[in-house]
Length: 608
Image (cartoon, rainbow, N blue to C red; front, side, top):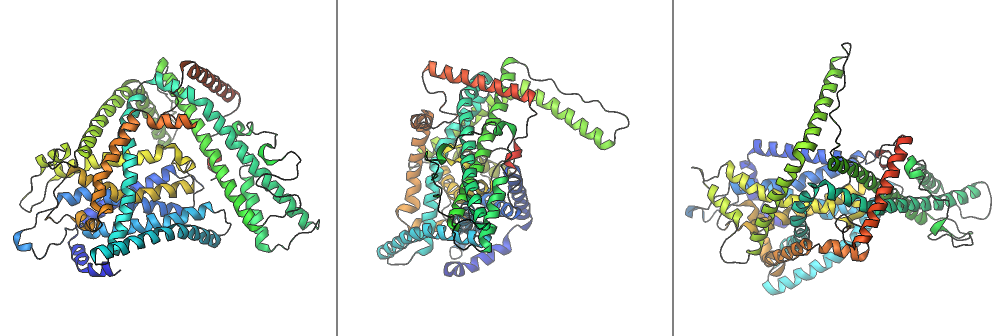
């Protein structure tokens, strides 16, 4: 607060000079983008208040990336007469609002909300207390480390630097994540696009993965069944108590409301789709010790459930339901992709559908039919004429951009600037009479930054170790998944921009570049500040080499973790067996769907 009060005069001056029309247009576009992403991924069961929180987080999360090209466009060199008044440009106030808002969201609100959702508590206040308590324990340790860093820095520099240390810690953590995700995405994005252009190899990949996807769906359904059995035991014990059977502690009204909520949640997935229902088992599996007296993670025959036990059981049931939805989404997606790639490989893509209209139909009906016909025609043209060429072009273009990024990162420590992006920016850096660049400069600055952001964020959505926290499918993502991705998106934007500005080596010294003024405190901390940004590219290069040699996929294959990049590792005979098993599973699924009316994949997901 003291630091903010000290710089309030600069903030006030920049607010008065902000181009209001441009910022309103930009803010509206980013808000619509954030709202579309949340609407696209969030399942119907996500509360509207939580959707609003995630939308706001995404909105702020895109703000820094959108502001940087505008900031560089209006950056000018200080004149000699301005030596005493070196204030930043008009975007400074917007940067400050976005930075500290994302800091509060990414390290305060969103982690507490995520822990509250995972706590399993039954009321809003108990969930909030549990989430804040767990988040406080984590950040208490981090604050102790930050306090030690502040004391060490104060002893070294003979001055107190609280805000710089906090900024350095947050940005160093973000730079580490950006390095890891960017090192994977720079290689995976072009390679994935090139592989998708070959339907034969993609069909074989889906056939090999079918066995593991089917097994994962069985395990998810069985875990859900285990939770249902434990909840049934709780219901039986409570029912016996209400009927006066046996000795039991005194339960209050709140306790019975918690039991009712648990039973309501259990009933929400009691009737699964027919495909999931047939995967249930009549075996008690992990719940019985053989004597029927004690269940694993359950209660003894003479033990009554406590509120803490009900909360843990509620959290386990929510996770089990999320796993079922995630596994079902993965299976349905795999089946749909296998069918599509088989059509592309065999040249049997269905012809465009022509729906006849009757003269008595309304105008709205005719327009709807016309749009469906046009959409069907465009889809046919895309799949048969354009898809392969576009994916090959996108793969080559993204590979060129990835090489340019890697070259810029690898030469970051050199005393001369050999970044191709810096060369392009220098060619279009032609200020007007006011000292500001044109639209081409802004576009040249936006393209590499946007590509880096796509590589980083696509890696978050794809890496398998996020499990149920991944954004999956249309309206398939749970509340926890939405909050989790929003949390990391807002944490990464400023470190991503910081690394980008270092990568292009754009000279912002003695200029009014607002981003450099916001991040100037990083230079106060010796290693965690500007020095780490030089070491981070080495990590990016190492991760790119690791990914290029399929190191991530080989590591997952060694650990026995199924992933779409690790399925092709193994001897020929093993892969042929997996492919044949997958062909059988996919054929059986198609045959069952010809007899049983298929249920929409959103049926079970809508419960969350």
